[in-house]
Image (cartoon, rainbow, N blue to C red; front, side, top):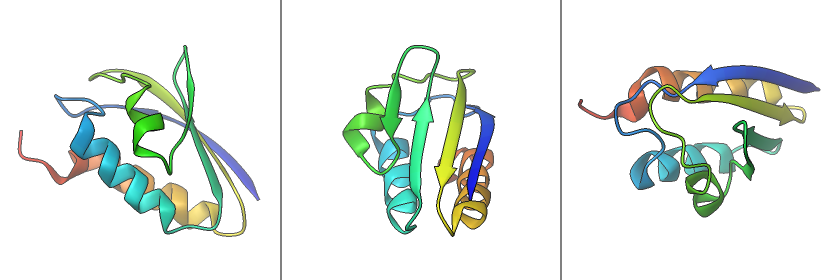
Length: 90
């Protein structure tokens, strides 16, 4: 199964180190391949450094592309993480 979804970075600090680490840790739990892309770059969402290279600040639109048998659950949990502002106090 291949799923794609646009997602907006809503937390104030964007995908900084801690947020990138949380995203990569979450994505690494899934068998599916997970790619995240900005208008300028693509990243392997399972790699902290790759995610940080997106330099995604608050308001950035990203496209998530998840492919594999657990794609639906992976995308659901990724959405939850973004919506919770990476569980950070702002």
